[in-house]
Length: 298
Image (cartoon, rainbow, N blue to C red; front, side):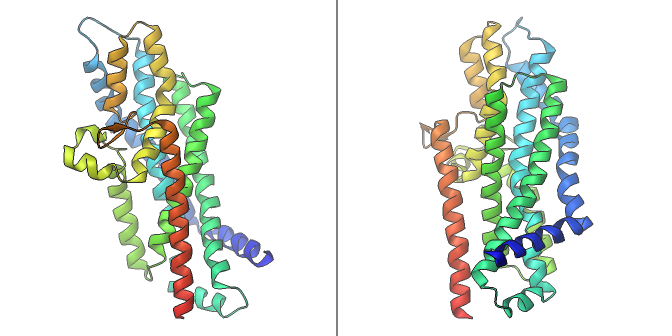
């Protein structure tokens, strides 16, 4: 246990000591928030306004809250996974510079080393993602705040769960990487592609029916939906209190993936949590199995 704690401490120190890796992980979410507000904010706002019945208007604060909730949930859904890949680069860098070989020649077990990478990546990613969530809350407070204390706690829980998922996913993929070029390639692919397949950049309801069915098998889809539901629940309740037709509010919620479906069956929030939890456990199990088989082969 002391060996595991020492390795976790060592990995976390190296992550925060590497200014390039740390600042990239920390600044990227802030840059994304600015880009989302600049380029996606107007698109989302126009979409919400066009969904309103003719002659029916809502206060700007309420519309901005809708836009903000969608932007914030999109940002957090992406960052919890992409930042994990960035934080987990140390696993590959240790292979590239020979440090992993030196560590495996010591009395440290390979399973202990593998677990230290996972836990230290989880800690580093959580720090960055929770800081990002704080920025998002500040943004919502300035645009339109309709979150209850329960919503805030649920969003934090969603961030933790998605970070567990992102760390497990990055561990399973990064364990096969062994060069700096592979790190850059995987990081670029994840940064560019994950936001689309999880429904963060564009609602899944806008995709073709066949693609929607394929994406419904991906756990990240439900992680994004959890954040959507908790970031916008208070806003939707306020809409209803201002006499917005309930079917219209439900239509807006459905259009931005608050009510995802799996082959025509609606997925409840409790089921989404089960899917995400099982996915995390399964990915961690695969990661442990890969390392066990690799150790046996060695």
